[in-house]
Length: 147
Image (cartoon, rainbow, N blue to C red):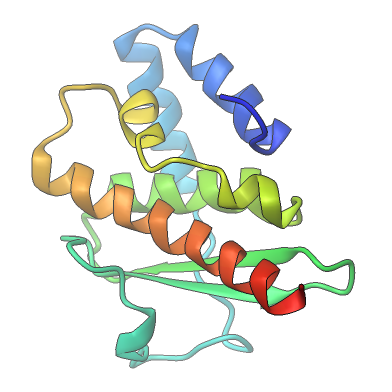
């Protein structure tokens, strides 16, 4: 994967080195680290235009402009059983926030299968891929508006 943010590239390499049990444990830990969107950014009920389509966990995405021209990504996951969506939100925030917009825009939604494995259900996979797509869309839109 070329020209994607190095924190994401490094995390993908770490995940590749784990077996299924270790990967599942790591993803559970990431889910536990999930930080809800701050109230200064959004409060419930969240606006529909921030909702991730196809996401069974009722996820929402925000992109906050940073002084250095990057974005800070925020996520909300309304389904209390949305462990995968919370893990994905943590991964996207930790690896794509404050990174160059052109690199964030290059992240492909197929990273979902590399992160969670091929055994992911189609519905869950589509929702998680949509979280990636909205995140990268925000980066592309900001980059375009600044050119």
